[in-house]
Amino acid sequence: MVNKFVPALLVGYLEAFRAAFNSPSYSYFKGFVWAFMLIPGRKRVTDIANACFFMKKHVSSFERFLSEHKWSMHQVIASLVSLLLSQLADRLVVHGAFLIAEDTTFVSKASKKMRGVQRWKDYSSNPDRGGYIFGHNWSILGLLSPFFGRWFCFPIIARLIHGKKNPSLFVSTPEGLRPANFWDVTVSNVLYAWQLLGRRPLRVVVDAYFATASFINPLMEKEIAVISRLRKNAVGWDDTPEYSGRGRPRKKGEQWKLAELLRAFKPELATVHIYGKDRQVAAVTRDVWLRNIPKKVRVVVIEGIKEPVILVCTDLSLTAAQIIEIYAARFSLEIAIRDLKQHFGFGDYQATTPIAINRFVQLCCTAFCIWKLMLLPKNASTWLDNIKPTAITESAFSFARARRGLRRFVIKQIFLNSALTTDFKKIEDEYEPIFRIVA
Image (cartoon, rainbow, N blue to C red; front, side, top):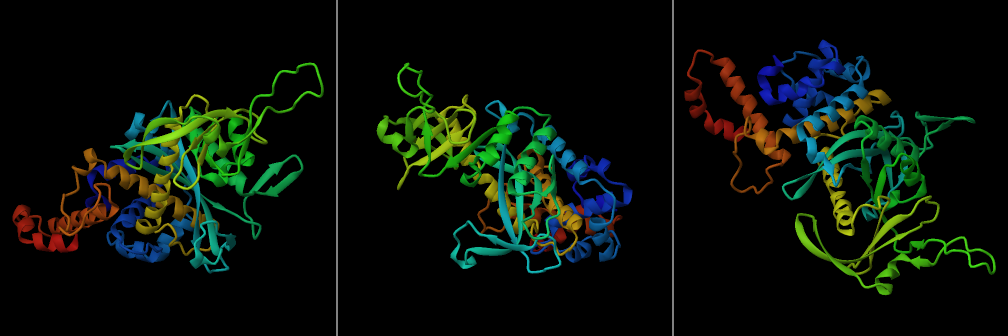
């Protein structure tokens, strides 16, 4: 019965995930993806169960779907990646390689019954948080794709980062098991995505916190390029000069304070498309060695308003303009994280078991990607009426627009199913004011 209240295109997208579930679990999966978009506000399991009126199941059944049903979260993620590849194709390839972004986000939780809840250092410099936050720390990784002069992020993986308190993720080493640290989780996310993409050329863009050997070196071993930002006091070295035969051989070439390259060399102007606009930037590009990094990297030092911006890229084939554009594209992941929390209830889970928490969050990411595909122009025209309040200015890819459209679609189906022998066109005209109020 659920298919009666789901746009036909969405039914087709959901079929891509059928292999991950048995028949009863698949119905719950469709209900979750449907309800994440339909429900405004919080997305607790109780709210999802109440919204899925066509399933006639108690809320405890929805909770068991998360905590007890046997379904593969790996298969869900793999199916999501396959769906994105089939729908977006070459749009996911940027300058000859797939592009992903990774970042972390906090979810405040007060319950001590939840595994992984602890006090974390807050690096956002938000004075309202007092420098610390109590809750969960999540690593989120998304595929990036350029669309109509802007960037979209499709979050495909979300994994809980366990701190020193009550760890539940461990790494096997020759010395034995040890708790997984921050870098184990974030690096493994990239390697996992790389495998899902068929081990094809891949680049990952991250913020300055990840510009460290602990993150860069394991990825360089797999020939996965990293684009990041360096701190303003970063230094680099030129190639080691040839030995002249006199004195002790030098281990490193000339040292540079990278921010000072703007004064040492004449900046070149480059036209880049960032944040939806074409801009001209002045920058100096130089290939240098960094401390604890085994290969040369390319640094781009950009003239900033107050101080230079220093970008680093381990792929020496990219130009300065391409590196700048790719780093600016990382902002789309921050927008995706905001939308995950605002529209898909990313932090609304109330379960206490790790499996239920991880499943809920991964379903949020899956629903996000599916509904973002539903909003593509070629897809939106098949199910979404272009109706909006005149006072609202919004993007064609707004999830608020999708929610109004889905609620309108569901109400139409309710009227249609309650009056099968009546002229539905006449009903639609008569109840048009109701449709507008609901939407």
